[in-house]
Image (cartoon, rainbow, N blue to C red; front, top):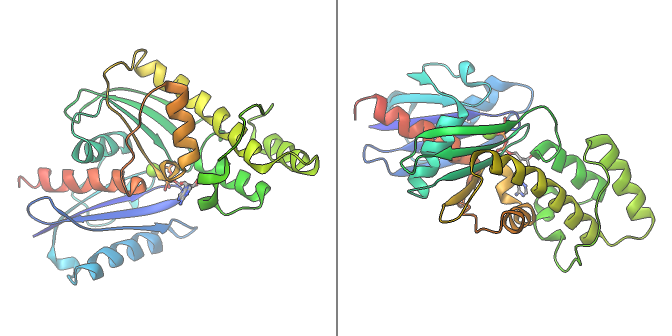
Length: 262
Ligand SMILES: Nc1ncnc2c1ncn2[C@@H]1O[C@H](COP(=O)(O)OP(=O)(O)OP(=O)(O)O)[C@@H](O)[C@H]1O
Ligand SMILES: [Mg+2]
């Protein structure tokens, strides 16, 4: 008996497959692209193929993410906030604060230490600090998104970017490169600017982090430079699971099992 969680996000479509014990059997991430249904089909096919089962073997599916209503044959669709909270609770039991930075928004979620959401703060008004913003900055820096992680290494940390608006930040980076400013200093300035915004979101839900377990989910958690800058802005350690972009899908799969009464 198998349980499926599907998270259709703005940039990535993720799936997690659990067995009847709640053990993760497979997790997959594919780009959302322009055709949502194709991404959903593909990501489900990947997790089914990984364990050589067919769709008929799935007892229940729960969907989440902005496109959650597009997932067919679902038992339920649940908000991303609830799913990320449940997913992280399974990975880091007792999580108090969860930071989720995805493609188009960032959230700070306060949990009760047992996977339930107490409150959250969200920035979905502005692209600054989101995954999409970082992709634009990687293009301006002429590096791959995966290379941003280590790009700030060795920087003095003295550069402050004057704008976080995507278009202005992009042209500021282009002129800094033209002026001969080291790429690591630019990356460090970028990471610190993002961290400053995230730190103020976190402070809204948890003014004092003393003794609290803090974790991060969403694709931007792959970016070690951003994670380190947030750790330093909050003066706390942040737990990042191995596949941070699949935390929402994991929570959805856990809810699929739970809501089946199993
Ligand atoms: N290997 C990597 N290194 C650095 N950053 C990465 C890596 N993989 C993904 N990302 C970042 O993660 C972002 C996508 O995050 P995620 O998959 O959580 O988005 P999403 O869930 O589709 O978005 P949303 O929840 O806002 O709808 C990318 O834009 C990119 O910035
Ligand atoms: Mg997401």
